[in-house]
Structures are given as C-alpha cells and as structure tokens.
Image: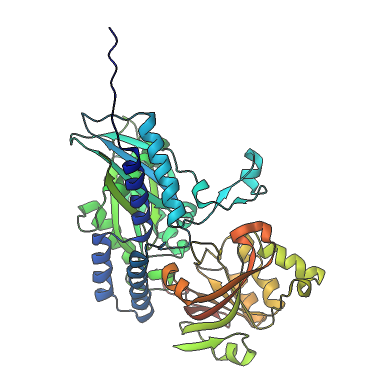
Length: 292
Length: 171
C-alpha cells in the first residue's frame, strides 16, 4: 500500500516571509552589529576613523527606516535552511523560497546585475545585463538539520568586495593551532588593507575540503554574533586591530569589529582547508525567518 | 569640512591635503570597470564632445548607478586604476572611490595635478544627496554606463594628493 502525504502550505505566506526576510537582510544592521559599532565609535581615537564609523552607523539607521539597500552592491542572495525533525522540504517549498527571493529583490530594489548570455558571454560580460533585479539568481541553498522543530531560513547578501579579497586555501597546521591562526591573520591583514571597506568582520570556516570549508564559513556568518566571541575569535580581532589599517583603510584603531569561526570535522592529515571572507563594514548582511 | 563645487580649479586642488574632510557638490561623472577604458578610448579618438562630456575640472565617481543607488567600488581594480592617468591628463581633478592605489598611480596623480578621495559606502545617505542622474555614454552597459549626476554634499576624505598617500601610515 502506498501512503501519500499531502503537505498543506500557505504558499503566499511563505513567499511573503522570504521577501520580507531578504529586504531586512539587505537594509538592516543586526542588534549586535549596531552595538559593536557604538562601542567602536566610543573607543576610536583617530578623527577620520571615528567619522567613518559614525557615518556608516547613520547610513544603517536611514536604510533600515527606508527599507532600502545599505550599499549599492545590494549583494548576491545566499540561503541557509535549518530543518527540524518533523519538517518537510520538497520542490514546492523550494519554489516558494525562489519566488520570495525574486519578490524581495524587486521590492528592495536590488541592483540589477544578472549577466545575460551563454557561458562565454557570462564570463567576459559581453551579453549585457538583465535590467530586472529579480533576475539575479541566489547561490545554491545550504541545508542543515537541527534538533529544534523548526523550518528556519537565513538569507545573507554577499557583496563583491569581500569576494575579491576572500581566500580558500590549505594550511599545514604542524599540530599547533597558532600556526593556523597566524596564517589566517596574515591573510586577513592583507585582505583588510586592500578591501577598502573596513572595518571587517572576518568569517572563517575550517574543514576537509574547499566545499566544506566554504560551507562552514557561510555557517559561521549565519550564527556568528559580535557579542559572543571565543578566545581564538578575540585573538584574531585584536591582532587585526593592531594593524592600524582602520576604517576605509585610512588608519585607526578599528580594523575589525569581530571574527566568526566555525570549525567542522577534520581529516587525519597535516593539512586544514581554511576559507576566509573579510566581510565588509556593512556585512554580514543577514536576516532569519521561520517559514512554518 | 571644505565644500568643493564642480568644476574644480587648479587653485582648489593646490590647497587640498591628505586627510582633509570635504563635501562635493555640483555635477559629477560616474564610471567603473566596464566604461572607464571606453572613455579613455574616446579621449584618444578626440570624440568626447560628441557625447557632451567635458572633463576639465571634473570629478569621476567609481560607482555603478542603479535603482539600488550609488556607492564606491574598489578603485584598485585593474580597469579602473589603469584609466586614472589618462583621465587626469584629460582634465579630471578628483577621482572618487575607495581602496589603496599603487605608487605609480600616486605619482601620476601628482604629475597631472589631480587627487584621489575616498567616500564611505553609505548608499542610503548618498541617495538623499543625489539630485538627478542621466546616462551620457554607452547605455548598453546598464548600471555601468557613463552617467552624469547632480549631487549636493557628498562626504569624502582626501586620500592621495601631491605625491602623498593617507595609506602610507605604519602598518
């Protein structure tokens, strides 16, 4: 006997929740981000650096009020779905999420930056741009099971600058954590100096493969909190702040606002694969919503 | 805070120093990776006037212009930074963007009497200071087309001027 499960969903409600989540991610600083900015403004002693921090926080207040993009590079949507033990994910749900993303990009509005054309045209950008903000496809969705009985979607909007300066590479750990953190700090200092849009929040994933490390880096961004920093995260942030790169790279005490690390399962080997993303001054741009 | 109005004179440039906080008002151009090399080609072909472009005393803001607004892209991207010397020779006095530039570009800016300023990525604030926008050249590039903006009070910091760079601090 074949059992048929019918899942009754209010599709319009899910689409609307995803749309609102995307708009919030692109236009709003999280509470911990606002607070870490206030603390940095209080501490900063360099006049131009303090002005940049104040202006960036003021910009976030205006964008939240207007529900408008924090930055003109409104970002590529990256999706992370937490699935509880009694929840179901099927093609219909994924279709609703896709529709919600399109609706959010159009209402925000996101920057119309989908490249048209075949493979070669999309590489050399010779096929032109699609003028529809909703044509921007989200990156592949990440799924993660959770003990909580929820279906929670996290949306992150990734700007282009951190992608230029981010890095996924191997580190030979030599059986010392400090060897790995020293190399990550070298990467982060170089990236922060060239990024232009500091202060950064450094997102790091450490895994067994490039795919896994990058997935863990995304997870670090999803669950990271500036108010909750472990010893390794604090060390990386503190050492970055001694670089004197400062906001916008103009010098100052505030090069990094925090560090988010997620360490996954590791391989019996002398190598660790590390993915490091120097999230810019307005990132991580993220928001979460419970879909059911 | 010094308010600079476009077009910018040599006298104004001479007074600017690294670290000065300024505001920019008037008409400014925008361009980034895709269009700036094309503008350099127009300069070389003597065709700027056909598009109604006058770079004498001009500001070029390294940004896209889209419904999402405006905001600086990295000026040290190859196609942007490599265009700066030719644009300066053609009359651009202030290049507006973000990020550290090379020693070669710092020297070229000094030689050609131009400066580089950085502007924070504060799109929501800049939208309220942007009074008008129109495409002047290469409309097929969409948000990356060469635009003319009318702006009031864009905030910026002089980062490179007269051979000196704000990035030359002890790292």
